[in-house]
Image (cartoon, rainbow, N blue to C red; front, side, top):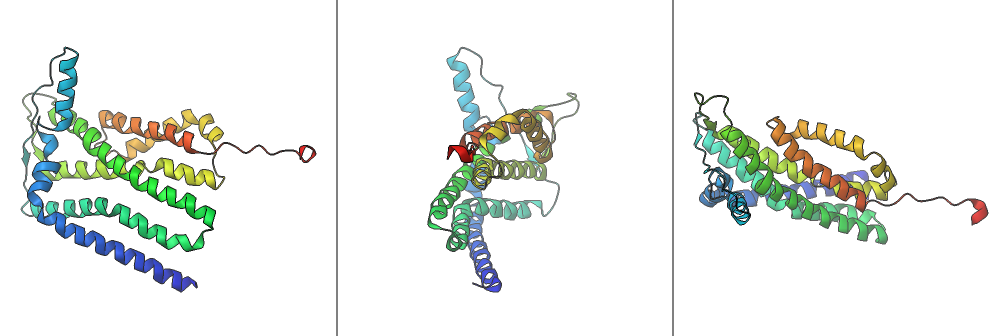
Length: 261
């Protein structure tokens, strides 16, 4: 295929991806009550599954339960609720459509690969989809609730009550969850770079301390709130992913001398 034929094929992949996201967005948009009341706003009350699990664990070891928790969101922008509905519908549709988008991308690059490369690349795309959803679930079920509970109840003085705006809540919610989905692709990236011979297991082990500092800086950049609590919550899974990436990379190939061959 010529360059323009490749470009035309890529345009088809992008077009089909956008159509899938648009259709899913309409479906999600129509399910407003379930989307917001049961999912998006679930972490603002003590009934959220993570808080109940922690209460059960604390009761099991004989400790007192968590303090009752609830937040009241406020809206001061006339159009904010509608555009929030549209934005969240798009984000959810994008997340749900990711396996299909990965499948389309796989179909685009597959003809250019050898049979051995096809098997390895196909596995990488499958793992990428799994890791993306894992990152989204970790962000939704762990990182965001802890961040919300800490920042939502923190006060410099009792004279200054917290009034959380809808825009602030949605911004942190969407940012954290999408960021966690993306950063969970680290092992796949490490696998690809290892296959290309750019990195190896020994190199990643050697620079483990340096990597922790880099990941800490990266977490500070991608953390929407910028507070130390959220920073550490994001850094911990990033470093665990780095350790997983070490296990998935190839060992350094030892070149044999001509006399030994």
